[in-house]
Amino acid sequence: MKILITGATGLIGSKVSEVLRAAGHSINYLTSREEAIKNESNNKGFLWDVKAMTIDPNCISGVDTIIHLAGESVFQKWTEEAKDKIMSSRINSTQLLLNLLEESENQVQHAITASAIGIYPDKWDGQPMKENEVPPTADNFLGEVCVEWEKVGKKFKDLGLKHSIVRIGIVLAAKGGALEQMAKPVKLYAGAGFASGKMWQSWVAIDDLAGIFKHITENELVGVYNGVAPNPIQNRPMMEAIGDVLGKPVFLPNVPAFMMKLILGEMAATILASQYASSTKIEESGYLFKLPQLKPALEKYLD
Image (spheres, helix red, strand yellow):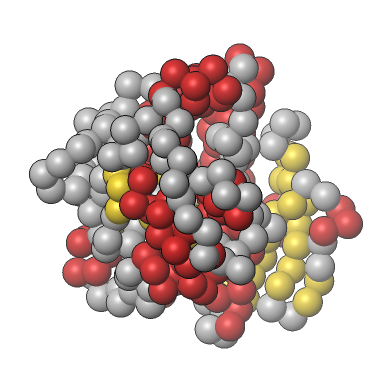
């Protein structure tokens, strides 16, 4: 297959690209930087500019599937300017792809778009959240972003394409992402939980997340899937597990919620949320997790 990936130089996109190329697929990818363009037999770069709403139409030549991962990071102070960038980067980049498909002859059959489990409201107990097409949503900016992100993504169906959404959890990887940030204070003997420490953390190993995208692509699955591992864990036990793997005790009291809000502002909602999501649907589709348990994942990615 030939697959077009946006966000292919980011944490998730680079791993997805690597896994798909290793499986024999050819990758086209979009970048805003001319110096990032490669022209290899199975890995070709093309320019786009989301602000200017321009895109090289050759990027979809021969492409069967689009995996759309591009978007401004939500892990920054949520100023009004930042909020605008976070929202518009997702909406406008998706619309740019939709415009290209409408205006150009192509053979694209399937579009896979990203979202996040931040769409779900806090959940503290009971059964993990399953993938309702129209779920109850978090009452914060991240919830709003996910709702709008998914809404525009569903327009691929209006063009006659198969469409899938992956709601991504907390991604564990060796470099970049949440785990690197969580491990930093632990390495300095300053590790602690947040607020009550009882918030659920629905995590996923980067290898499994890339595997999920590959599985959905190759099997042409449609619908919504949570990109999370089968065993969520609460915040304080997760921090203690990181400490255990690093050989650094986590003994400090939890950081109070009001302190998190003072430090991070409105963005603290992403840290304090209790996101309890189910992996059952992707497992029932046939995906077999490589790292379903937290400790082996931490041992693989932490040093």
